Length: 519
View (cartoon, helix red, strand yellow):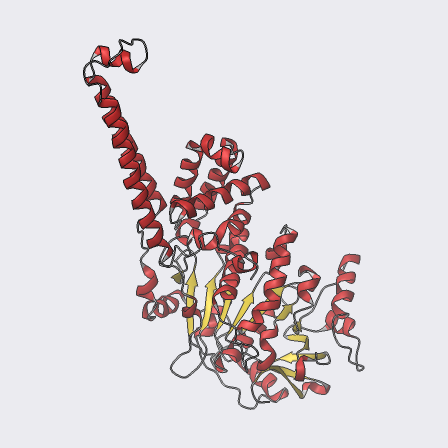
């Protein structure tokens, strides 16, 4: 079948080839199944198929096994005979071993190119979810972002946000008249959350150079799509950071990519592994926005595939949009398990040859119940499918091989070094230093004033005319006003400069910003 990805063999004796039609691959999908049923291998062969079709892929490698995509399988591998036998059984006549173009990424910068974004690009909504803030604390965070916007303070990294919160606390009395109550306790709680996030190693994630989405959507010299693999084994120790990052990336794709209508194949396929982390304890407003993005992002040519143990982990409104499904075995030991199994079976188009519910419970390792979209986007009849063997290496590559691939990449120099340009932290530091110098100058002038002038200034004495240096206070006030005017002009120039740059654009945009602006 042209313009499609071969998944495996279904039907009687697994002789009927099962395909994923690339034209409908951007209508999203689901890969589900209990631990140890073969989901990882399914992800691997799907990534191979998309890459060979010229479609870039982004996927998180939770266990480290997906790094094997960078190396070809081997005839010396212990499962070589089993793989070749399966290939013959399902009619995979051109089965061979090959490696694929892989780019490794890592939020911590240890096992791949560092991925960074700025605080302003992530936005207050996702920052609040990342820090698990209360409603009152989230309100203060929104005030901080608003002030950063108005004052022209670029928020690039964690120290920028920390400095802004300190300034917000010091100015809270004046600002509370405009924005409402700003409590020191709430600011302190946000600061403590930021410290925890920093201790988890997330400080390196915020900063520049920020990730360019175009670097995720490349092809190699042979026209094969780049397979972008995010090292997520360490990241999973901070599940909230993991889910928030992937959600941010999804929103960036939605906001920045142009409309492409109904393409012949996706521009990018996004695999969201451990999808249940996205929806756990998520407020309804956030889930509604994810559902909206899932519905609209396919017009940008992006296919999103949720990977989880049970379809019940995905909200019903989002599950209904996942047209391409590969369901590995589900365990049903409890009443709740049986209910979830029955609900999963009811989402498929029935096959008269077997019971879908029984098939989902009985399929073996490497076998799945599949249903993909056919012509005009109609769901295909469910089939028991024997998943094809991978062409790349099954299991992780060596550390030295990974390091070699990272160092030889043309992206290495671009993202290796972190850039720390002038931003909110530096600007507020300069402000504080200038304010301290001005206070010292006024204090020195006060000391120089005569006793009579000081008494006059403090209103303890009035003789009808000012004695001594009677114009010093007026001069001071004029100088202060002139200094403020000069500072205001500098700030205006800075705001204009930042808003014309890449990090100054719509500071409060962030996650799903386009939708919140009524896009």
